[in-house]
Image 1: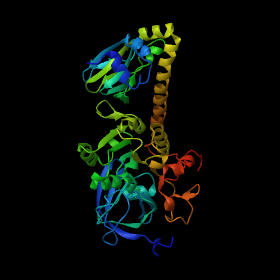
Image 2 (image 1 turned 90 degrees about the vertical axis):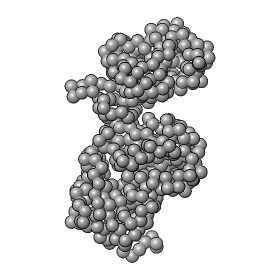
Image 3 (image 1 turned 45 degrees about the horizontal axis):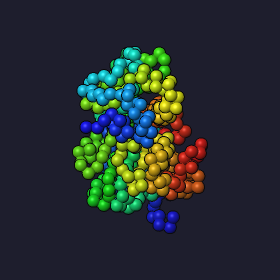
Image 4 (image 1 turned 135 degrees about the vertical axis):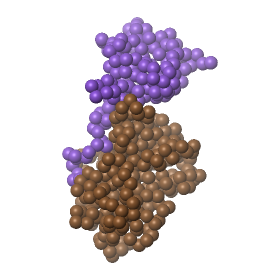
Length: 159
Length: 277
């Protein structure tokens, strides 16, 4: 059975990180699993966790008057949740397990405390989180373009 | 130009044998070849003529091993494509072709193959997939990544199921938006690239979809370590004559109808970022 430190070192999010930093982050982590249909978190609740998916898929969902919309699915190697970084620390979406999900869960208050105590450690965490956020933002922009929708308004004449 | 037949500009009659409904606005037409049998390279296109309405370029989407039928998947977006999508078995459409360059599948022999399709872009890639499955032993790992707008907009559903059931290829499907009943991926197709499980140094990638999607796919593939010379894209422009004479489909120094539609990404990468080209 692998230790938490070994699991973190294998995860893409922590790959290549200094081992003493991994040890510090492991102090905030625990191994978790979610059965199909279980929620990792719900919109509006306190955002007190960061999840790294080890195995399985998670749907980010938004409740609308028309029903539930799946915004994005995340899977092995992905990071789930960064609302714990920004006050008032509330989840903006639901995150639901689409099957059995194995993940590493971090206590957000613990992460914030360690980042405050050691800014270099905090910067290392941010350097890894920001590219994830940027990648998701760009993907969301592409989704908003509705590239596969009706080509009305495009420059090319429709034949 | 010297290899063009004298009657390249004359549409020949092709009888509609069958029409398959793919989605609300997409139909696949099965046509009898004007000469009875015909041959094409995956990636090439024909000019289809809806008599009395007009002519459009449409990629061939059939299996290159089936020489007794011409298959086209048409999305109804304008007057001509709407007319084509409404044809019934027994009716006749005009056909010129095949034209243009094909997917260079021979470059992938002995290597991994990555197929990246967005929306109707799966249609020009289907013949390539059929071709590589016919000689599956010639290739390494094969992964197909397909993005569509919604679950209802997926093309070739039966075939996708068959492809997914195979143990010798990976098929990942994603949609841009879905309800809670959808069990698959949600997100842009480029998010699937890191999961393809192919060797970036050994893979040949074939990409077709909206131009923005191809730009971002090319960029992501480069970030993963795939050389631009090992990526091929299929371009779409306003093709009319289909032989590089009229100039409507000029794309920088190339005519898409004659020099493409399939281009090596390394050749067109910089042009893809030039506005109004």
